Image 1 (tube, rainbow, N blue to C red):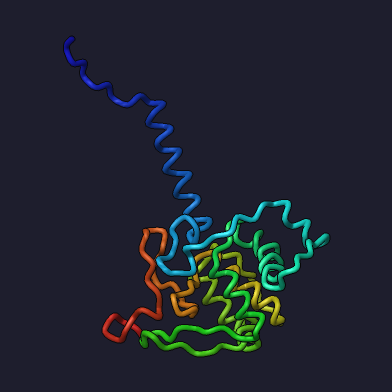
Image 2: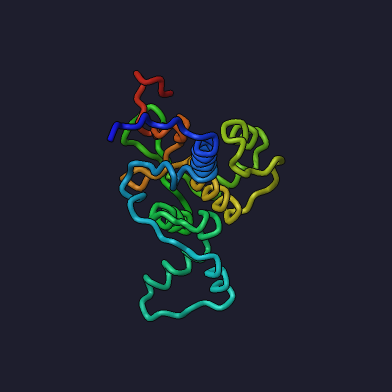
Amino acid sequence: MANRPKKNKSARDKKVTRQRASSAAKRRDEYPLYYVMPPFEHYKQWFQVPEHAADLIEYPIDVDDEDAQDLLNRLVKLGPRYHGKVPMAAILLDQQLASGEIGLAVTGRPGYAVPMPIAELAATISSQEALDEWRYRYPDAGLPEHASLTTDDAAAWHIHNLHAFGALVMDDDGVMNLVVENPRRGKWVLNGQLDDSDGGE
């Protein structure tokens, strides 16, 4: 039997291919932290949090193990913020925020970090100038348009929002880094990885 020539893709097949590509791009844009995972240890473990888990805020489940209870409580709280897919990095970040400060990488000095008190972060986010800078760099991160006096809890929530959006990423040392290149292209470049010769400050 003679080999038949391969048929060209039908218009329907091409449309389906375009729709899939568009859908994948949309997922990457909405949640790059999951769909373009950072290449760090704390993004190797993820927790699926079902939508109905939010009911546990009002009707919590008690477990005997204190660490397990703490993890469960954090997952219930963070699930909606992280689209129902919570990385271990978010749990560790939440623990840092609860302690009153997080470690922030220093641009231009790989391996260095400074402890940043949440109260200082709250004051920074309360500044219109600082907020405008964040909004300019990350226009789709869901930050408020106008600065107002921000509590420590609100500042912590904004930090989680920036993390979920992919504007901040935790490295293998548990330090938060500003993302300096668009991760949607598949490459994560962080301020804490840059040195002075790379254009760091």
